[in-house]
Length: 116
Length: 108
View 1: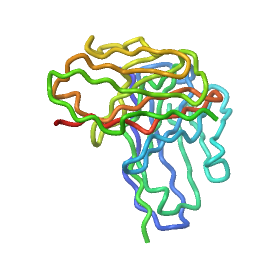
View 2: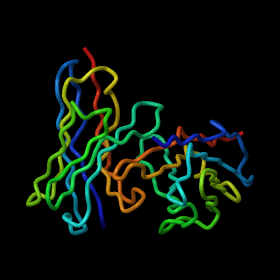
View 3: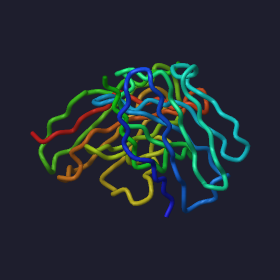
View 4: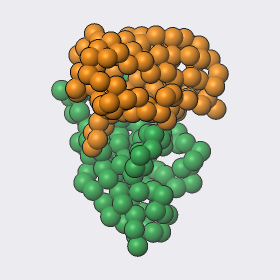
């Protein structure tokens, strides 16, 4: 079946960076973009950006443009999200997702905790 | 930027009752609206796409309606597993995604 498996939970100090991986399986990975969405505790999901897995083109939310970088390794069927200059407000669950109109497949989520 | 407003924020109902959840867009989104269910510790689960199309495997008690700016998710008869948070979502300034603030359906 189609699924995304993400890397494990992270604990970071303020000012640090985090890089999360998302391995896809069950479909032709170059056929769909991979999006990243985060959800802070008790908050609505928040879109961060996406990558065209086929050609590597990216687009980012204005909210994160200066701090986020999304990359991919097509041979490994894996996408990556790097977020820099972390603050406590970046404490959240981060999801990769496939968007076919709505989001039809979500990753299992990676919890990032930012604390001194 | 399109803003999605959901109401009520909380809906307290008993099993077997009908749930009616609303989502209002700040400007017309045509029928480009989806609904998701989220339980604690889980990713959101797609229920409805294009305002009224049930996703694969979603029970018939879930239905969506509306177009333009006003949308409704109806659960005809609540089952115990339906108590959760529900979000509406629009694909805005493609390829961005916008989510509503959510409605929590809890047990009365």
